[in-house]
Each structure stands twice: as C-alpha cells, then as structure tokens.
Length: 174
Image (cartoon, rainbow, N blue to C red):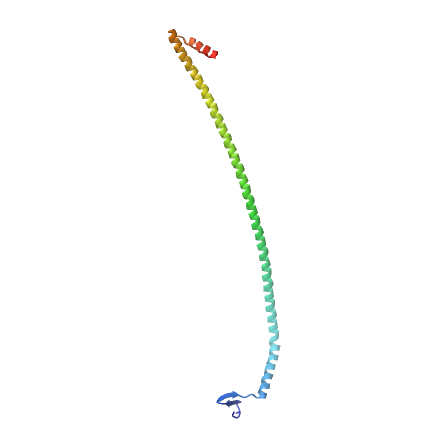
C-alpha cells in the first residue's frame, strides 16, 4: 500500500481503493441526519396527509364495493323471487289453460253428440215418414191392382166412385 495522496485514493496491487477518514464519515452522518430532519419537517405532513387520503379512498372504495356487493345480492335474491313467481304463474296459467281446454272439448263433444242425436232423430223421422208414404203408395197401388183385377174378373168397368168405395172398404177391414 502506497501512501495516501490528497485525493484520498490508495493503490493496492494496482487497484485504486478509496481511503476512509473518520471526519468524512462524521460529516456524511451529519448530512444524513440534517437531510432527514429537513425532509421530515418539510415532507412528513404531506406524506402523512397523502397516506391518510389514500387510506380513506381505499376504505371508501372498499365500503362502496361492499355496498354494491350487498345491493347485487339483494337484486339477485329479488330476481330469483320474481323468476319463481313467474314460474308459479306460468304453471297456474298452464293448468288453467288445460282446464279450459278440457271444458271446451267436453262442451264441443256434448254439442256434437246433441247435433248427432238431432240428425239421427231427423233421419229416423224422415225414414218413418218415407216408410209411411211408401206404405200409403203401396196401399194405393195394391188397391189399384185389386181394382184392376176385380174389373177384369167382372169385366165391366167400375167408376171412380165405385173404386174409391172398394178401396175404403178394403182398408177399413184391415
């Protein structure tokens, strides 16, 4: 180690090494303490205020987030209840619609049966009328044939009055 020149740099095996003097160390410590005190006096209030404001903002945001979470849970619960009510209403409407449809189908079936009964009754009445008309026509034809046969047998001509009298007497016997 060579001697210490004025610059405070020492050469050791070809490498420059800085030499430490106790005065330099004390001055540096005093500078650090003074700087700390000045910074504390000047900036401490601002830093504390900034930190307090930041803490307040964070706390406010946390409170706001919690409030929004609670509101969201309340809305979710409300929507679940509304959905449940809607599902209940849908079930009721479906049941009511089924009931109405069943009643309507029963009414239509009853109405159709009634109409079918009326049609059958009308058809039976027409059949009875046509049967009676056929019987009457048959009676007239039988009477005419009987009259014609009788006139051939008697070979004489019978008047319309005689014919009517024979027919009436024929049907009166039956």
